[in-house]
Length: 233
View 1 (cartoon, one colour):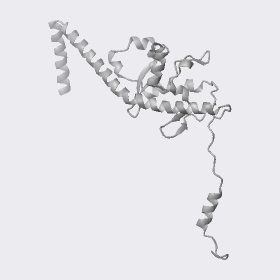
View 2 (cartoon, helix red, strand yellow; view 1 turned 90 degrees about the vertical axis):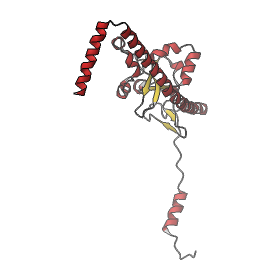
View 3 (cartoon, rainbow, N blue to C red; view 1 turned 180 degrees about the vertical axis):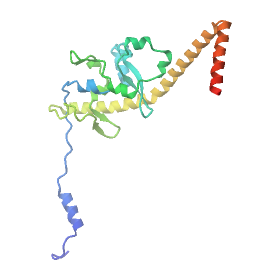
View 4 (cartoon, rainbow, N blue to C red; view 1 turned 90 degrees about the horizontal axis):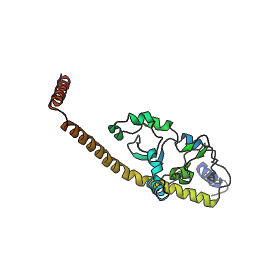
């Protein structure tokens, strides 16, 4: 190219782009400040088989059972979660068929972790906290890491060592693996349990029918006969 020839605008832009310094990715640093915000506003906390095995090894699994529930997500998938105990009135009025129902999403999002003591401002199960709590607010989706709570006060706090960062990343990867694992098995187990509940209800109904007098059966037949006529118009 002669001195008089001018460089094309496209080549100029390419050179300028190449000469720009590469933007460095922001370094992830985190130190839990025990601010309580995640404990009080996280919504459903997913539980994995790893957590169940850990609690069993530590002899505390029975303590967690009243707080566990199967949660059906909006996309139809299922998670095993920690949720608060129902009130005494709710338990007394609970019907057998309620075992097949799950708590609505909007209700779960409003509920807080039942294993956090507001008065003492401390987690009651810190040494046995689930994987989900150990890796929060860092998550791993199988390909990339992401921060799920950018407003967490612990984000950007200095003092995180390379070993702590490595451990947190490994925990996030383990959480992703364990969550995938339980989400595969949970729908199958839930279906088996649901079928058992239905069979138990049918058995109870058959036993109740067998104990009915002929007069009560006749009345029941009349009731069903009237309802069928009403439905048929």
